[in-house]
Length: 417
Ligand code: HEM
Image 1 (spheres, rainbow, N blue to C red):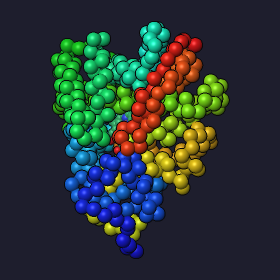
Image 2 (image 1 turned 90 degrees about the vertical axis):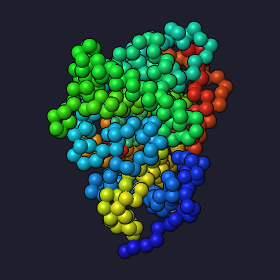
Image 3 (image 1 turned 180 degrees about the horizontal axis):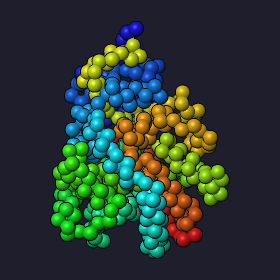
Image 4 (image 1 turned 45 degrees about the vertical axis):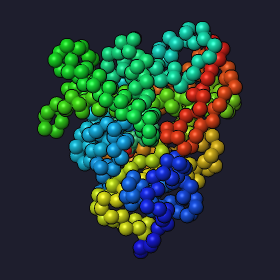
C-alpha cells in the first residue's frame, strides 16, 4: 500500500530544526502520531525523518542507503573532514572500517583505561590548590593528552591547551552556524596541517612511533590497491580518533551531572554490585543528548511504511528520539541505570553511537572505547576524589547541539579520597 505520510509544511524548515535542536523530530512525531514524516531541509531538499527500532533496521540496510553526499557540507568542514570514512560506501568503506576496528583490541582498550586513570590522578594535586575547577575543561585537556599518547601522536606540554581547544572546537561546531562554525573551520585547518606534518615525519623515518598505535597503523595502512593513503587523508582519519576521544568529555560531564542530580547513584557506584558502573554509563549515554540524528541518501527507489523513498532523497534517523522512544524504553525520561539489568543486546534499539553492525556498517568504532573511558572517569569521581558542587547554572539545552550543562560543571573543595 501507499499512503501520504505527514508533512511538515514550509519551503525550507532548516531554521525550525536549528530552533528546536534535539527535539525537532520528536516534537513532530508526537504531533503527527507517527514515526515517519516528510520535511524540507538544507536548501529546501525533500527529507524524510524516521525513528524507532524498525527505522534503525531500514536505515542500516546497505541496499537501501548510501552515505556519500548525505552529510551537509558545513558538517564535513568541521566535524568529519572531507573524504573521511563517514562519507564512504560499499567495499571501500568496509576495508577502511577494518583499520579503525583493528585499533580497538582488548589490550589497546586496557591501555587507554590505564592512561585515563594515570592522567586524572596526576591532576588531583593542582585541583586541590584551586578554589574552583570547571570539570568539562579539565577533562577536555586530560582526554587530549590521553588521546595523543594513546594514538602515538607527540604533543608538547606547551601545546596542550591549544590542541585541546582545537579538538574541542571540532565537535562543538558540528551543529553550529556563525562564529562557532568558523571557529571549527579554523581548528580543522590547523589540526589537519599539524597532523599532516607528523605523518610526513613518520614516513620519512624521522619520528619513532610504536606499532598498533593509530599514527603508526594509519601512516602505513595500504588501501585495497596496495597504496598508502594520501597524508591529507591520514590526517583526517587521525582526527577521527583524536576528536571523538576528547568528545567523551561531554559524556563525562553529563555523568558528573547525573551523580549530582541523583545522590543515591554515588553509593550504588561505590558498591558496584553486578557491575553497576556499566549500567550507569549506558544510561548516561541513553539519557543525555549528544549526537542528535544521522543523515543518509536513498540508494535506489523502495517502498517502506507506505512511503515511496526515491533515489537521492535525504533521510534523517532520529538518534535522540530513538533513545527516548516510549515503545523501546519504559518511562524514557527517567534516569534509571537498572533498566539495563539483564537487557538483551540489540543492534537496533539503543543507538547513542549509531546502530547495526560495527564492521559492515557505519556504527561508531569507538563505542567500546567510550564505555571503558567513561567507566574510569565515573569510578574516579566516586572513589578517588571528594568534592562539593557550588551553586551554578546546570541547565542543559535540548536545542544547542552539542548540549552541555551551562556552567560546564564547577567543582570546589576537591580532595583525594
Ligand atoms: C561514528 C557517536 C566516540 C570514532 C559515529 C556515529 C555516531 C558516533 C552517532 C555515526 C554512526 C553512523 O554513521 O551510523 C559517538 C559518540 C561518541 C563517540 C556520541 C562519544 C564521545 C568515538 C570514539 C571514536 C569514534 C572514542 C574513536 C576513537 C568514530 C568513527 C566513526 C564514528 C571513525 C565513523 C564510522 C564509520 O563511518 O564507519 N560515532 N562516537 N567515536 N565514530 Fe563515534
